[in-house]
Length: 557
Picture 1 (spheres, rainbow, N blue to C red):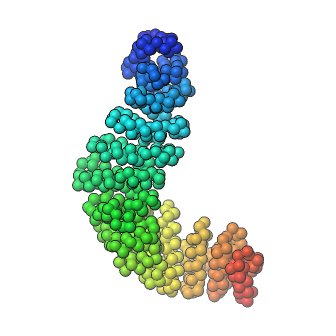
Picture 2: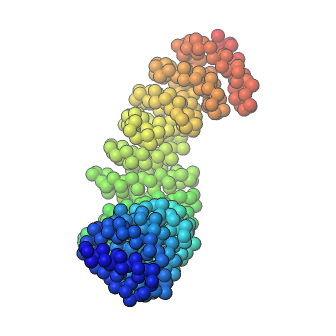
Picture 3: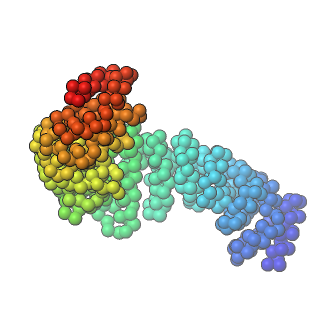
């Protein structure tokens, strides 16, 4: 290490004199020392105070530039050297060197910047602001024959693409075209994996999704799926998963999805359809998720239902009822839920037997499956007949009441409440109300009236008004013990309550007057005061309902 001290002293002099031969000798000694013991050598270099000299040595026309950049890259492998490299002002001259024509300079410069900014979002953001993204994309296009440079660019893209601020810059370059071109040339699994690692974060951006689709990435992905589908080699299984996952990600963009749907006639859409009946779980999953993504507008949903997609999804679900794959169940139910949104599809899906297929999963203990099951049923029961049939299904109603208490899973809890309410609102059936009362569902509907979501509050109040109008005697005790009257008083007195909440609360108050015990509670709580204040409400419907309710309360008192 004494030699190193001499070298560092000599370097101080030669760096100023710029005598390239002796400078080169010093740099070679440093590289040798770093290769033997990187940490110790780095500490010595830091202690010597020569780091700031390197910025003046990073000049395009010098024959030593590549070696200087190489030394910086080696130093910055150590975390403790990264901030000193920044403080020595090395980032700006390194970024300038990315315009060099010399491939070795480019390679070492890329390594140096990558190591200095490793794991630092603020430094990576600084590089993005300095415009390195367009420069690197250009380099990838020019030097795609140079494997080491290509790899350097991919590693840089992988790191920068994690930052949201990079996506806009990437979208303004031809990165999609370059990556797809590169991808098509790769035979080795490792190289393709590297490109995948860049594609995945980039494909989260909608503009880039479309660019990747237009550049032909989807065709590459479909080819990989075809090649790997029957292989049981671990790396092939991994690549199949990556390719099909990326395919689904591309479908999350509205424009890219519609482009690939091509009115339901597209080659891509047809290929994805063929994944659903396959025996490969990963493809079944990707196929169902892709259908759920295609089913994001009414036109696509109607076309798919008319062309038999529902039967394919039901067959898939059937294969996963007993000890099935939870992710496949979840994906297939997601697709059915989305397909059930257009009004014209509901009756078709009901007559195809979707509710029966979905109800087979009532015993599932997996919250994601429960959530999608509930959502699918809620979408399907707009029709009175369907709501009545399901609302009289004691097993279903009991399970809903149980899930209304799933405090650990807010989504399941919310959907269960909404489905209970929907069964009453759409069926308007005394039998359905009796089933729900007997299963202990009333208290949950009353709690739902206090939800932070106005839409849920409203659904609960409308369902409770129907209960009061059709089966007040049956529900009376449960409404009393759930403290409904006190809750209604609170909703009417609260200035923050939405107009429709106030309106429906008053409608419900009037309906409750038919019960002696609830009527007494209404009188005890001085509702007249609260209601009379609402006669001057800015919302006409609320003001009118307040007058009607006030008259009713006055007559009944």
